[in-house]
Length: 61
Image (cartoon, rainbow, N blue to C red; front, side, top):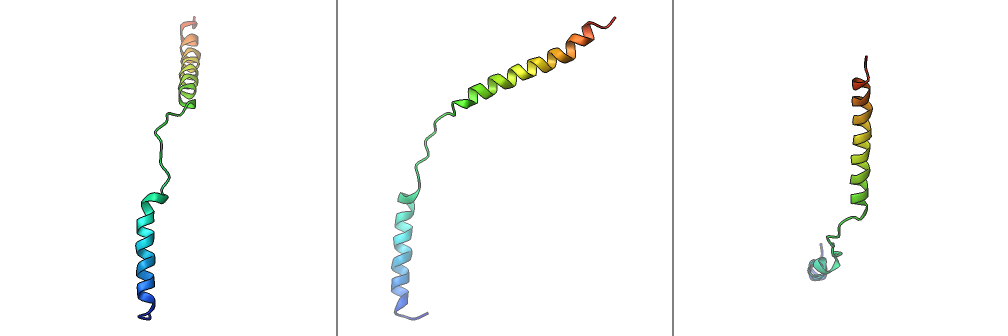
């Protein structure tokens, strides 16, 4: 590596490290609105499955 290019490379590295924190997108901690709908559907599906298993057991003669 040439001695002339080293300062330019060092400047570039320092610039990138300084800008690294500002380039990151801010992550917001918003709750997913579909999460509650998905949980509700999962619970309803579990109830249907359990009823489908338990109901025939009670109707056996």
